[in-house]
Image (cartoon, rainbow, N blue to C red):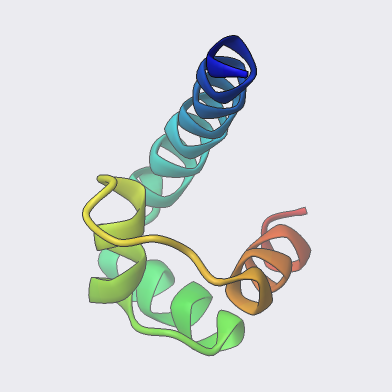
Length: 68
């Protein structure tokens, strides 16, 4: 069971690294727009990208849609 938890954590971290790279590469105005389209704020998405906050399922779906 512990191994499965470690694998799941590694997958989540890998995905968050990709989001962080994508999100932080945007200029501030584009981050604001992206966050607005996702139903969030730039600050909240920055916290998610750096691992300070967790992402809700609803927000994760919106991020996936807007970043495609």
